[in-house]
Amino acid sequence: MNTLTLDELRAWPSGKTGHVVLLGRPNTGKSTLVNTLLDYHLAAVSQKPQTTRRNCLGILTDENSQIVFIDAPGVHEPQHQLDKAMDHAISRALEEADVIVCIADPTRDQGDESLMVATRAAATRKPTILVVNKNDVANEEGMKRAETFFRVHLPEAALFRVSALKKDTLQPLVAAIVELLPEGPFLFDPEQLTDAFERDIASELIREALLESLRDEVPHAMAVSVDVWKEKPKAVHITATLHVERQSQKGIVIGQGGSMIKKVKSKAITKLRTIIDKPIRLDLFVKVTSDWRNRGDMLRDFGLAER
Image (cartoon, rainbow, N blue to C red):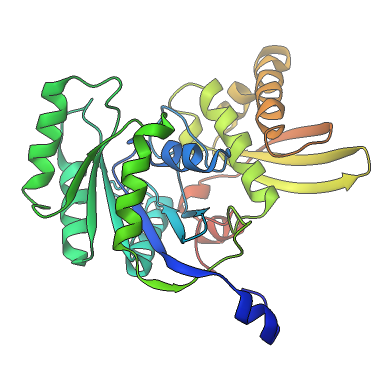
């Protein structure tokens, strides 16, 4: 919050407000839920696991409440330094949380990752809500299995069945979250949707285009850095580097005759238009940054680990 005058402090809104962590294994729909509630494409979404790599704030405000959602990375067993940084981000989010929303995916078997989610939520001893997502595609058997699994560890959590894609199914959940939040001054300006810079959101949207376009083994070895962001009166010029770990991956990203990089660029521009209301000039470059997922300096440069 910026420094405010006495009159501004007196006028500053208050109500039910606090941090709400969305906790779940990869691909449970955490980012989709935030995007749907905000009507804004804030967080990268894809069918590939580990799309969310860092905590992402989404702020939902009305006259009487302000919910600060923390879209945390998916809970999984760390394999790289990147994974460990993501795990640290989850721990940090849980420390800040006033309420935890534990999200289950009933379309998959509940296994070790779901157990990690449930036990981690229970260990905080903080108010927790259990959300079974994807009720628009899951069958009743899968829904009940997910509920039974999580109920073992979270017996007192309120339960909601939702579709993160359908805003009307989320309203009862939002009301329940508000009831659990403490009273206090709003944490952010009521007009603010996130604490992320526009170029950081752009980086995520470009990576989302990569996730949608490339085969499974390549996207996990990729990071995106936005190197140039120039706003001119009639256009925005963005230059981004797509980092891969091996030379063979660079060839895949570029594609024969540049076909893949052109496809990614076209998709990325379409996504960037959701946050930029000017014509966009996007230049993409591919660079081999060997073993970046195990290099602390690169993780910090990419904003994926604390400095």
